Every structure is written in C-alpha cells, then in structure tokens.
Length: 356
Ligand code: NAD
Ligand code: TYD
Image 1 (tube, rainbow, N blue to C red):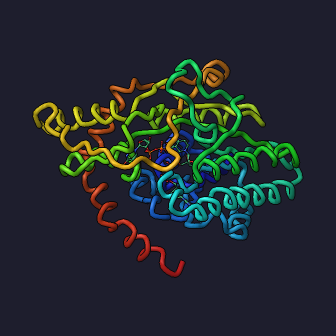
Image 2 (cartoon, helix red, strand yellow; image 1 turned 45 degrees about the vertical axis):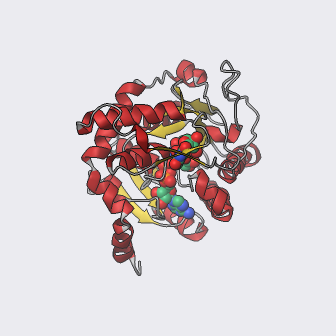
Image 3 (cartoon, rainbow, N blue to C red; image 1 turned 60 degrees about the horizontal axis):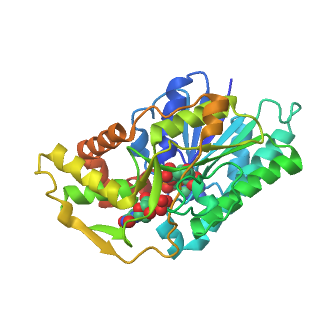
C-alpha cells in the first residue's frame, strides 16, 4: 500500500498527475496538498474528487507543522512535489513569493519527510521524494547553435527569479540525498501545454484572446524558442520515473519539439479560426508586438535521450495533434475559462474553506 502526497495537485500539471495516479492505482492513497493560490483550481479535478483513494488537503507547503502531522497521519511513503509559483512574469514583479514557496516550501517538504521517515524503523526503505523542476534552471541557449540542447550535465545558469528559485530548490533536494541519504529524484521538463493551464501562460491566454478578438501581446520580436510537451505526456513520464527511476538521478523530460513563439502563435490562430469557422487568417491582425520581457531567455531545448533510453518513455502525441486537441478543449470549456477570468473560482474556495 503506497500513500503518496502530491503537492500542487490543483494546478495545471499537478491535476493531470493526480488524475493519472488516482485512476491508474486504485490501491494507492493519493493526498493532494494544495494551498489554492490564484493558480489552484479544484474544478480541474471534478471527475475524480469522489474517488475513495483520493483526499484533498488545503495547506501551504511552507507550513511545516501541518505537513509533518499529515505525513504521520497518512503514513506517507512517497512525495511528488509540484507545488510552486510558476509564472516568470509574476516572478519579475514579486520575487519574494517565489523564494518563499519554491525554496522555503520545498525545504519544508524535505525536512518534514526526513524527520518522519527517519523516525520509522525501516527509515528510507520503500520511500521516495520526487521533485518536479523545469528546464529553465539551465539558462538560455543560442538560436545560432541548434545542435546544442540541455542535457542532465548542463551547468545551472538561471536568469529569472522564477528559474533561480527552482534551481535553488533542486539544489536543496540533491543536498538532502547527499547529506542525509534521502531517496530523491529530480526531473527537469520543458514547457508544457494542454487542458487546465492557467490562462496567463502563452497558449491558453492566446486561445482565449483570439476567441474574444482581443490583442495578442507578443514579447519582443516573437523569435524566442520554447520546446513544447503535451502535459499528459509529462504526467506519464512522472509515473514511470516515480516507479522505475534511479534514486539520486536527474532526468530531463522533453519531446524534441522546438517552436519559435511567432510560429506557434500563427498555428494557434489558424487552429482557432478553423474550429470556430472563421476564414483562415481572420485573426492575424490581433498580433501586437509589445515590450520584451526583462531578461527574456532566447531558447530552451531539452535532450531527453537518457529518459527514453533508460526508462523507455516516449511522447505519445505529435505537436499538430496535441495543439488541435488543446485548442478544442479550451473552446469546449469556455465556462472553465470564464470562471477564472471573472475571478468566480476564487470566491467559491474562499467560501468553501473559510474557517477550516
Ligand atoms: P501551476 O501554477 O499551474 O500550479 C501550481 C500549484 O501549486 C497551484 O495549484 C497552487 O495553488 C499550488 N501552490 C502554489 N503555492 C503553494 C504553496 N505555498 N503551498 C501549496 N500549494 C501551493 O503550475 P504548473 O504549471 O502546474 O507547474 C507545476 C510544477 O511543474 C512547478 O513546480 C513548475 O515549476 C514545474 N514545471 C512547470 C512547467 C510548465 O510548463 N508549466 C514545465 C516544467 C516544470
Ligand atoms: P510562458 O507561457 O509564460 O512560459 P515560459 O516563460 O515559462 O517559457 O511564455 C512562453 C513564451 O511566450 C515565452 O518566450 C514568453 C512568450 N510570451 C509572449 O510573447 N506573450 C505573452 O503574453 C506570454 C504570456 C508569453
């Protein structure tokens, strides 16, 4: 019997991981620990919230006492840690929140797991602390050298407060292995896309704006390159690595799928127009070039050869298929988007969890 805390399970990627584990492993106990910040939304998990092997706990990962007590109460054997502040633009405006949640929050999770697991007779045996991180910790690659990708050996060189906080958290996780022998794993994944992504990130924001004929703010010249992976494929990788990954290892996760922002934006416009029955190119006029993001990393690209070779993971979807599926999902789930853009979803939680 495994009892697993998944942090950040009400967010974008976390909700896909929770859904996968709850459905695939009915004999595991899955405890979703989420503070429900602006980015957390329990509507992402409507389809599994009544499953007997699932429990939601509203808690802040920085609250060590609550996390430690929960680990004891639930006899936790594994942690899959996704909770984080995740938006680069917000980190530029408010770096403290990123240091608090991403660094101190991760440390609090590590220390709670350490003290709890060390108190058991079997200690680390059968335990696993799996930390989900990003390719952004490696810094930026050059467009002029497409042959160079991020590997697990690439030196950390973060530029944004977001990536600096994630890099720091990765170092703490590895330090807990090297210092105390905690069974840890770290993975660094490229940009994810798919259903339930908060509409402040490029793809859902632009789909929503195109639908409502609002401007599409393209940073700089739109020439920055990102490497996109369908979120369900990330969740599948997390499942494989949680079960079969080697302790103390790092795995890069990515689908070898690099796109210049402006090209992806044109693809999104084309797909939305097609699905809404608008003439091809009808919404190209919404493209609006705006001031570049401060310290905007030029290119990210992940080499996931190690994961493919050692653990047999492969992305299941080609990008063209994934993006059409994604656009269709947002167009079909306008209510989900409207609840977020109107702020309705936050009021609901505040009423529901007041005084708890
Ligand atoms: P998200 O912003 O959609 O969700 C984050 C979740 O964490 C939310 O549900 C939020 O309520 C919760 N949370 C935030 N602060 C918390 C706190 N103090 N205590 C408890 N819960 C808290 O993020 P996401 O895009 O799903 O990313 C999840 C993880 O994956 C992050 O660690 C991120 O760094 C990493 N990652 C994301 C991407 C990507 O493209 N989105 C790529 C690689 C890695
Ligand atoms: P984003 O989705 O914020 O992910 P990240 O910054 O973590 O890669 O942005 C993806 C790319 O799109 C990035 O190069 C910044 C760019 N971008 C825009 O041009 N306009 C926007 O409004 C947003 C949100 C992003």
